[in-house]
Image (cartoon, rainbow, N blue to C red; front, side, top):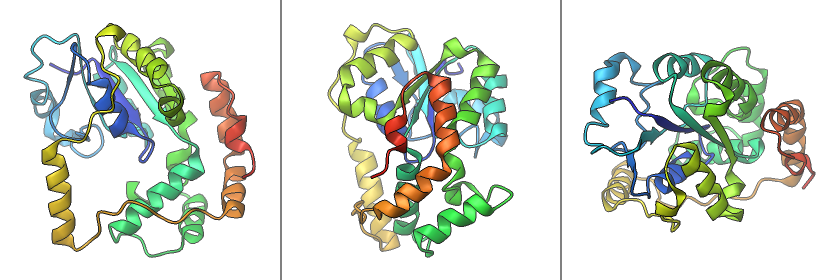
Length: 255
């Protein structure tokens, strides 16, 4: 079967963590493997490949996966065409914080050598997308992707969370998500599930082979740079605020 819910978002917004929390429920089945990337990287493998990841759902009420698909109109259109009745949950984050986390993700993987200001600015000034690894600015322009998705499947099928919702009131956030995908929140477990032992071992082994550190920390961003780049997102943040009907003025506030 095809999934009846998706957890989507932009890279480094918390999609994987939210997905692990959502499937921590008796009536929810999550696809095996981390981030299937069907609608962006593996679409040419066809629906049979995708459906095979849900073959063991065992009659679960909600069946789905979580991948940061919020990254391009073609991807949104594939989701709309193939899953018109599925429930969508999107998670988004203050866009400069997201971009800086994304940047250091690339630095750890030795994909990026430029200073952050140069890398971010080159994306802002580029007339076309430059690949998912380096779309530091574009991946924070959430509202256009979300509006596209809502127009295609119906706004009532889309729930948008902020990454801080899970930190500040996890019970309320998870309750909203579980209700949205059609399961009883009372049957969910609110503790944060750990990554599987297999995934931990896989990541450690991969880092050892590639000679890179498991350390995921990075230096803080200069407040002046954060403020300048936040100003670039001003209209985008105001549009998102209007779309989700939530006050995002604190995203715009100077540090």
